[in-house]
Image (cartoon, rainbow over all chains, first blue to last red; front, top):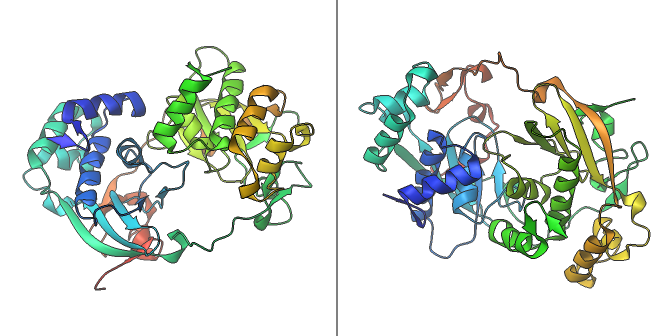
Amino acid sequence: MNIGPYSYEEFIDKVKAFHGSVAPGIVVGGIMVDIARAHLPEGEFFDVICETDRCLPDAVQILTPCTIGNGWLKIVDTSRYALTFYNKYTGDGIRVHLDAVKLTGWPCIRAWFLKDKPKKEQKIQDILDEFRKAGTCIYSLKKVKVQSSYITSLEKKSSGVAMCPSCGEAYRANLGTVCPACRGMGPFTVEGD
Amino acid sequence: MNIGPYSYEEFIDKVKAFHGSVAPGIVVGGIMVDIARAHLPEGEFFDVICETDRCLPDAVQILTPCTIGNGWLKIVDTSRYALTFYNKYTGDGIRVHLDAVKLTGWPCIRAWFLKDKPKKEQKIQDILDEFRKAGTCIYSLKKVKVQSSYITSLEKKSSGVAMCPSCGEAYRANLGTVCPACRGMGPFTVEGD
């Protein structure tokens, strides 16, 4: 079994280097990336949406040019284990998800995915072995049309920059007269304030 | 100038391989990662918050063990060019931001950061040259206390999994009786629906 341009073993090494550990979710993510790609028109530019921030985005970042920082990978957290590859100009896409309905016969994957068993009773190697054996038969695909807010418009203009009168830092001018952090949306308090 | 464990030129190669292009934002992000790290207690486990999803998260993912998929990198989009490295158990952190107030004397960085000039009139190489020359003097640091919602609790229990009665897919049970996508929060429509 290959994943992307890598042998299974090479992919595992890539996962360790980037993600830090070999979580089942990222291996299954690699398989899902391959399935989605196989159903895209060849040579097409695509963006990716992951419906969870857990593991799956790292498979996309390892195997495609799409990263969270270059904007070609987006996370829309519905908490479902699914990804969508789509044409960034038309929104036409292919969605792949790990399908719980198809997991009869794969007890280790099922226990991991549906959290049927305490984590300490699960063996990662058993789950990975089942993923290799199951191949592509435990996933479902559908054609989707991604909403316009996720589509790249050729005419889209980026926002200007403003200096926040409260914190004095630069922020996107179209977000209001003070920056989001100074409206209470920041993640911390400053020591001494 | 080194960035992380890399020479400047090696870092540029890493950026091209991961991010796809050498955007100034990711180079400055690399410098900001180094500044934050230099102010952390040695050997400490840390998580990272980026206050923008543009470029900066990729510098973190290239230079640290923190990725969007392993959960050690989080994005809280205030649109400010800032990152915070923090102790994941206490919330004590160091925040670094590119400080627009300190950009007098660095006209190319200023034009890029504040969008003073049309993009086509800016030369990436000139901006990068100024970043190398400016060293660490165009950033500001402060100690912060990250909010408890971003802190890892040793007692935290993960949610169970439920099957959505509407779409039939698995989702986090603590999110409601149907999944977020079936409550209208999904990113697409399904062809044929």
